[in-house]
Image (cartoon, rainbow, N blue to C red; front, side, top):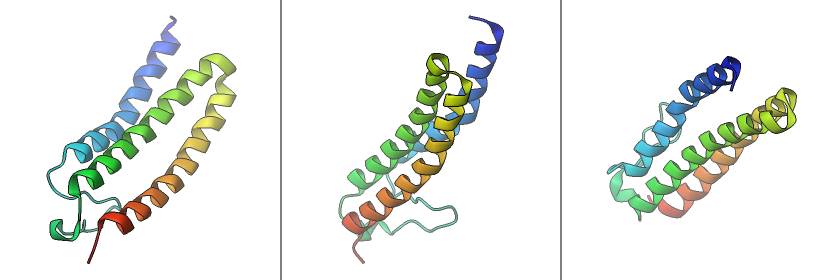
Length: 112
């Protein structure tokens, strides 16, 4: 392996590690997790299955981070341009998918 690959992989891990940390923290949380920045999470008594709700959100964040690592790996197979396009698609489509999943799970697990 050359230095360029090692340095770029270290940068990737440093940049994407907060996403994995969010996923792990949400997966293991004993309180109801929130999704939106600045949003107050639902109250514990409103959530019918807090463990499932938190696990789904945690797994969602972990899969989002994994998508970026996979895009990086595709860079070795098909080149940097393909990896950049896949990364941009992961970023944009991933956020939309996460919003859709959050709204779906909120509707399933949160009862006011």
